[in-house]
Length: 102
Image (cartoon, rainbow, N blue to C red):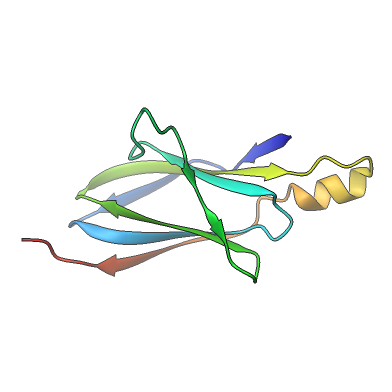
């Protein structure tokens, strides 16, 4: 197994809301979301893969400033070309869904 980490990203949340983290990595075996919002005992959030190669996870965050990264597990192959293609960091998108809680 081999993990590639994306650059650390910053996020400021102004109110409690459910966020959808997306990461495009069609050749990845597994993708994890790590950040300062993940409980210490959990370390990472396992993301789910859609058919189009986009990995996703939903996280409820309170107002605050956060840092996060994606950790992409690639399949190690004997072909250097295949491993290079599989380990690309892909593109990431963060989508907010407001959800007010009283």
